[in-house]
Structures are given as structure tokens and as C-alpha cells.
Length: 77
Image 1 (cartoon, rainbow, N blue to C red):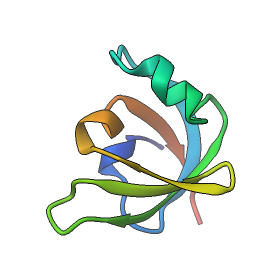
Image 2: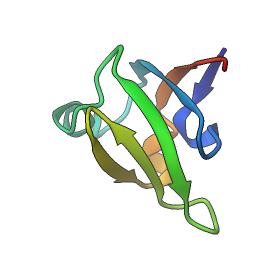
Image 3: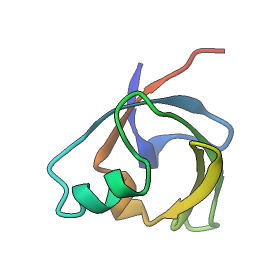
């Protein structure tokens, strides 16, 4: 099942499938958000922005508008 990264719930895991036409695509890739990387949602702020993720052995925080351009293949537990 595919979801946008900002739609995932706390504790959900998946693999990065693609980054859509984001103006910050290069910056996201430099931070380790590349295709097939495993990612997990750690927590969301009370209003849903920002969102903290675990990816490639470190935690990363993104704004909701940045996370909406990242498509994830969600793992089924």
C-alpha cells in the first residue's frame, strides 16, 4: 500500500518509493531520503507539523509540506 509520508501514523514503517516534483528534492536526497531506504514515523507534533522520522540510522524532522512529496510503500505487520 502506498502513502504520502505526511499521511503515515506514528509507528508505521515503509520504504521510500519516490520523491515527487519537490523544489527541495536534492536537499532531501542529501539527507538520506533516497529510493528503497527504510523509514519509520517516530512522532508527530500535536498539530501534525513537524514530523520526526527514523531513516538510515538517525532521526530526521521534516515539515508537513516537505513530507507530502515523498511516496512510501507501507509495510504490513
